[in-house]
Image 1 (cartoon, one colour):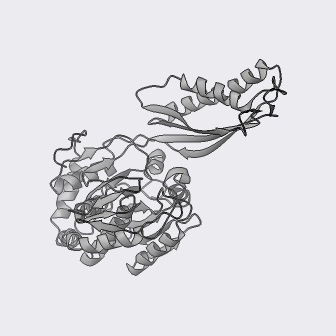
Image 2 (tube, rainbow, N blue to C red):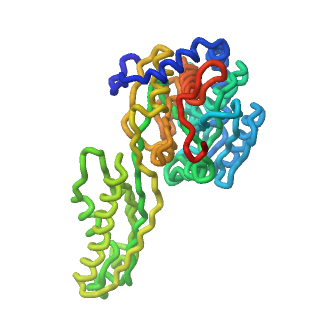
Image 3 (cartoon, one colour):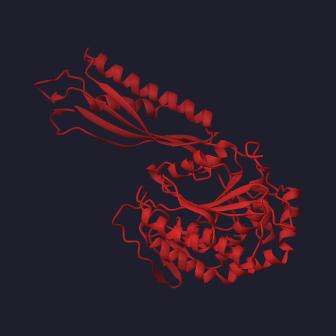
Length: 423
């Protein structure tokens, strides 16, 4: 970690630094941090137990129920499963101040039927989802246990929970629903990674299922009939030639194609799946406009080639992850950096990526995604693994960051402002 070559954050906020210093000097906070270390084995046990409950995207119910039981046993108020399947509750503060949601995601990328039994070899845990986001879920519970153990009284409220639909075509549906229904002033998402890592910029993506349809026919007898596959081919060729900016990074790919029935058939139907991404919402929308123009021009060209109007196209948006920018001076970022430094590490600011934090960042809510500690690899593969050595540092970073944001009674004032809509 100390030799990490990614960009490091060197600027710092005096307010965040002072808040974390005050926290580090408080007996209750030190007790919570110490407990996080001694509680490490229990945290890993939670990680294993939750990982072994399958939770494919759109099928997170069973894991959600297990997580619900944990939140209830840890004394949260207003624990609920919302209509989308998110699970969360509130640890009440002193009755004033900002609110922060500390969250991980329930779902994994793996389909139903995947063997999620955790196997251990030489101290390393192996299982699909053991890191992403089994580690995050365990860290959320560990932070809450540490606060309860040390009887830390916060100024603002801390919400703890887990979302559904973070992966793939889940399309961040859980965190979107949470922010549709609730107002919080800050957000911390926990993902598998080193404890010095901070994600604070959001890569947005739009994903489309584009289907071309026509009359079809025999390759010889009906030659001259427009082909759905040929129309799709024209679209793909045009898309491949699109120019996109290097900065902000903006990308596209046609990731899946299918269609036709036989080698000697003029295709009646063809379908492609397209993924476009950008770190900038305006750049994403500009690319989207150009790409869809390519699709409609391809249909017109195929019909014009045969002087017919046989090909039609339907365009379905199947993924919409908002992009978002946030200053490094955001209180969420500054508090995370101060917390990381206080534990003896150098903060590392990640490149933009797609996490649950996309939604609050897009909405202007201070938010970060933090690493849950330990080491991991093989993410999104059947060989995914997690090494728990020193994993408690991730718990400590999340705990300190959250406390700096909401404040601790008679120790430090919140560094996070209350949203004007809640004031």
